[in-house]
Length: 320
Image (cartoon, rainbow, N blue to C red; front, side, top):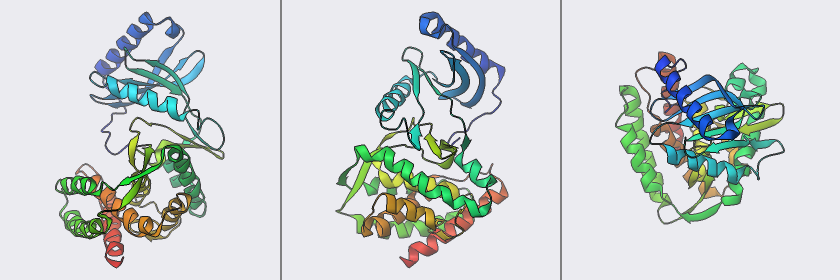
């Protein structure tokens, strides 16, 4: 589940009935769904999509049902799964297998993956064993992006403007002060990016550790609905900042508010240049830190961790 998804684990009966009616309508239209079923709901993003466990053709699956007005999102996600599945359907780094798509009803079925979401696995693992997952995560993303990678003029100003808009929504005063100072450092880095190229690729789009399912030595990516061409650094920053703002530093060593070993693993797997390591990645980490605005509903412990992350990020940005 992502921070942006204000989801309900226990949706009301009206939502459940509406989904059941929609599923039955699809079954009535398509004989291929005669033996399919929808079981319990896993997640509901009001107005956007529902995620349910079920089965199709005798196989356990996960249904992603896009709600009214989001039909194009279903088509985009299906097209991306069709593109990436042939590249990542075997070996230690995979994506879920696409099983069924109904454009008329905005429904996608993908395989149900065995294993544990990586972030949950990290919290339960002994601290000495957590860092072993950092390089495999970097390898997974490298495999996802490699075939579509190219260079283009950096579009960093748009990202900086998005960060500025998000920072204005920060409700906590201490975090606002830190983020104002971070914005100043990002402006300095942006001037160093002016006029250069950076790498872009079709990326996951919401690459955080719980969207990687670990089973033995295999990592399987899920929830690729946000896939799009973007700077490769954005997914890396999303992954590392998701952990950093929650106080998860698997190696025990922090840099720029995130795990130092994790940052190095991604830099090595992507064979980053000095400019990418020392200018672009710090810039995008700062952008990602500001884009995810804390809300008053979060616990005091989460806000304390976010403050520590932001303070550490600011200190290292100033030292660059």
